[in-house]
Length: 229
Image (cartoon, rainbow, N blue to C red; front, side, top):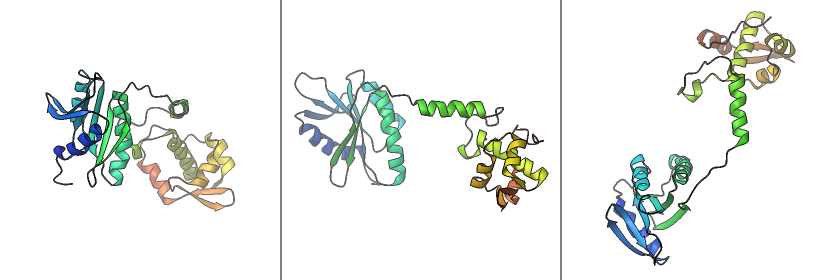
């Protein structure tokens, strides 16, 4: 695959389109591949050895010529390719582009999506989750663009309150911590111990781990960690 060229994709694509009754020619004007069948608008395919912004720019430009434009890349192996493939296909759908994948080992051609108008359905569940997180988060502790693992979520802010209470009062019953901090799910959060900050001292009683104590020293959140009665 290291010496792969765009021209390696052309024979399988040409054969695939010819099998559907198209006459196919390469490098016609600006287009890598042009296929014509009767009076139908031409099919245009842009070839690249991988998904890229350049590929999308070229394909979108071809939409000024025909509504039937595909991008074509080799189907690769590995988790990274498969993780990115779903997002790349979704982006192409949004742009009105089709996608062709070629398995170079045997020339197999796959078309995961065809060109056409795309109106994604909005997810009410995901929107509600976003709005709940927005409403629960106090202040604006995470600058936009922060690394995901470093984002101070509402959940983390609640965990900080629990840790601060335990640091001040020592091991406490979950119900007491919930009342003092206003975090209704205090017992469940300490039991789940998502961050490794809490430990079960005895039934229903939780204390702070060394990692939890250290988290209080390292935090620059604007949460009022001392908000416990």
